[in-house]
Image (cartoon, helix red, strand yellow):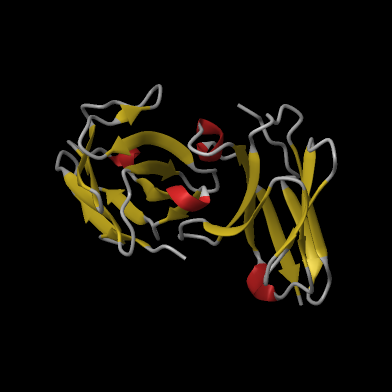
Length: 111
Length: 115
């Protein structure tokens, strides 16, 4: 199982771009990288998933370098409502890796 | 995206009683569902994998006789906390795989408080 490492916390201000990096040195060939967002007392919510290079959707971008040993979640122009815990998970389809949550990154957005 | 619901959203019970939590996939069929537990200010911890029509697979350290899991249909899995004690108070979250997309969709969670 590819273990993930993220910063415990990050602070930002409204309107800024936030980049959260996740290290996964032991990522396997078939593994995907998935990011989730969790608000207090709610279940995690899928944000974005990628395998290599760059993926973008309406809420975020995911940057994955060629060696895939890390990934960066980019949140453009954050708002107060983006204050949450962000988790990155690494695993292939149906694998246990997709079920193992690390400690996550607590993002605090200030006005 | 796919929707997963849980019921109840919160429950308070007396020590020694049993509590059942339901997890439903509303717009898709889920042969596999998962149950997590989350204590305050901690990450999600996988408890067990629920397989439709077969026995659940429990993670190391999770008592299968205490946390009974039933996955009787392709849209419903239940977790029963038997003889609950205050230390079982936690936030229980279920999820389901969407096979075609390799995505895991989570329910809103159930807050269990055992007095």
